[in-house]
Each structure stands twice: as C-alpha cells, then as structure tokens.
Image 1 (cartoon, rainbow, N blue to C red):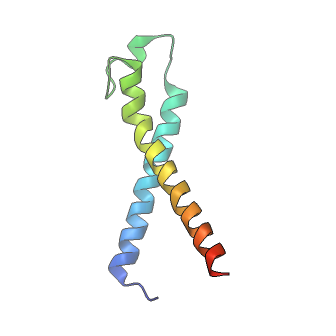
Image 2 (image 1 turned 180 degrees about the horizontal axis):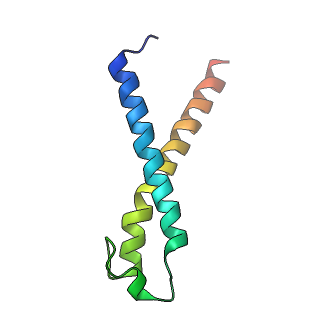
Length: 82
C-alpha cells in the first residue's frame, strides 16, 4: 500500500506531537515538588496537584494507551493472518 506525501507528513507530525506529550508528562512527574504546593500552584490545572497532573500527564497517558492498543491490534491481526 503506497502512502502519499501528506499521509507521511501527518504521521511524522503526529509522532512528534505524541513524543512531546509523553516527554512533557514524564518531566512534569520529576520536576514537581510534591511537598510544596507553591511549586505547582500556578501551573496549568493548578492550584491542586490532581489538576496539574491531569493536564500534564493525562495526554501522555492517552498517547501510551493508544499506542498499546495499536500494537495489540497489529499483533492480533498478524497472528490472524498466519
């Protein structure tokens, strides 16, 4: 199956966005000072820790879950073809 240039561009840009979201989510987990609410109070989703983690780590969790689903579906399809 031949893909067009726009499909490849979409795949590359989507992959870059997914990578950005995952890296941002992981970095946020390690840069927050959990014992000091003032360190994350002004972040997106603040002033509560749950909101900050939902905004920064939620998209990363969705990307990882979507990737796991796609890989599982591909594995199941290849086993079905054999």
